[in-house]
Image (cartoon, rainbow, N blue to C red; front, side, top):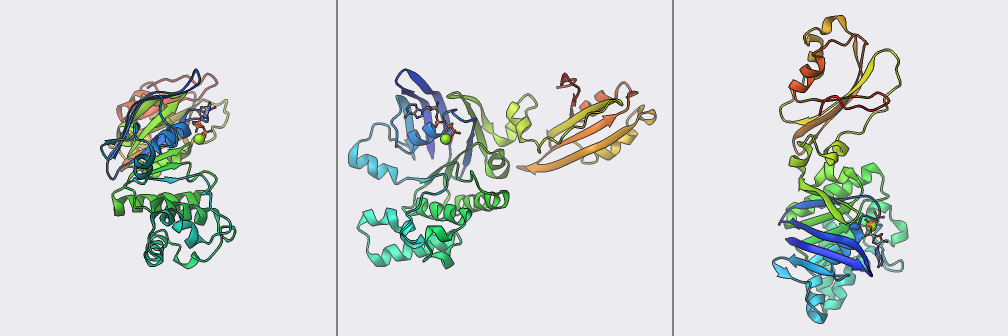
Length: 333
Ligand SMILES: Nc1ncnc2c1ncn2[C@@H]1O[C@H](COP(=O)(O)OP(=O)(O)OP(=O)(O)O)[C@@H](O)[C@H]1O
Ligand SMILES: [Mg+2]
């Protein structure tokens, strides 16, 4: 469990993190998203005790670590495993020797280190690569070594800063599935720092959006995506299709995130009141489920004689309609 309270970090007279409060419970995954320079990595370094906050507290498993020094601090760091971007591995060491690195400082016997490394490599699916060198691994495999190394000391918390950045979509999915699986197996609390919405869609329980050192939005993924006023919810919708330019009528973008929207809304459009005389074509549509909630986006071309009341028909069904004209005017929120 990690509880961050009123955390502020200044470099000189620049405030890089401003009064951040966030927490992640046992077995939970929190994604922290935000643009470049928002302060994500600084937050990560404050939580992994590589950087001391200017004020505020970071409590890990109930203990306030912000005031610890020396040996106490070193011991405290063991309860937070850290996964870095593109897993910085030692080139001249094998996979097994890289994973063993944190264990070597513990005066453990060779046999017990070997047993632990074997177990960790099995967990991350790399048993058959133990004697390979980093140069012989794919990006995803290197990241698995980084994950095994982060878990070597049996932390109850894991912090990852851009663990999937630079990986292809399939590899990203498999790394996220592994993290989710490890969370279940060890009851880990995970903070995943990322600029990829994919991470939020795939595995996060809660999400915080950081911008310019401040938290702009924060909540459970479920609450966020069901909130029609949330900018983050809009980013979590399936990718926006290219809307073609059309002079015949209007292009409408219809989106939703709900448990209530009837799954046949698209086909039932034909029966909307007064629709008979109008032309409605579906240019694109995509639907996916996030935490069991259907989220979707469709682009409709509506003939110039779109019946009055058709927008109401859609909004009554929990759909949000934007007319995708030049002004991007929002007709219904
Ligand atoms: N040691 C430092 N001294 C001074 N300024 C720093 C230091 N570390 C970070 N900063 C500043 O803090 C701000 C946030 O940086 P940070 O690396 O936390 O952003 P980020 O959200 O991780 O960005 P990215 O997505 O590009 O990784 C930046 O403007 C950066 O210049
Ligand atoms: Mg960063």
